[in-house]
Image (cartoon, rainbow over all chains, first blue to last red; front, side, top):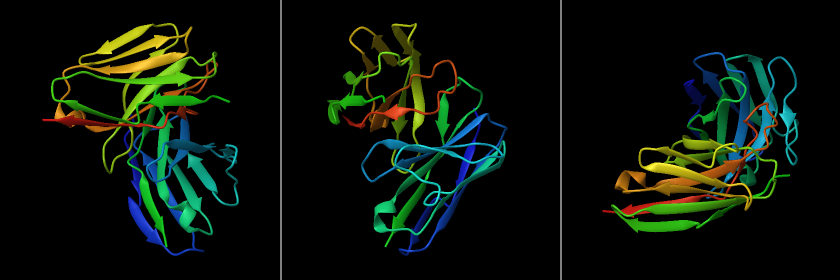
Length: 114
Length: 115
């Protein structure tokens, strides 16, 4: 399966600022997704990153707060905008190599907002 | 939408014992059920999955069973080892023959294996 690299692995940010998280895959993949894992909680899908077009957001998540880019088949970014302490979470990039293949996750970005 | 309930939230076993984690789902059309293991500081790692046309799947010490009628599936770990200690998540999706990426996850089970 594809190897997924996320940067940064962790960060501490001030409220009101924005952070862009990068996800790089070592091979071309069909689908890329962004998930959020709040402290001690389960995983929730934020959006599907669509190559060359706007991301598809799940209920409760909006583009202004979580802008996503996917310029090609191996790279995506997630920005957490105008952060508040409630945004403190692990943000996980995940990929589906081919349609119908299992979902694999990167190691995540651990974000703390103070 | 889909709702997945996972039990227990914590599970403590002695090394060598078996561990069982159970999940129930709400959407009878769900057709793909993966299990992930998450170690501290790492992302979830797929350990086994099962599709709705199969009742049981086994991979060495790990097995998953699916009961479509009752809408529940379970993870079985035999001969547990301390390195099995982690958080385990079940998930489900009605993929409709397309992407399996938009998963609904259970709440997680913290498994501790005591030497």
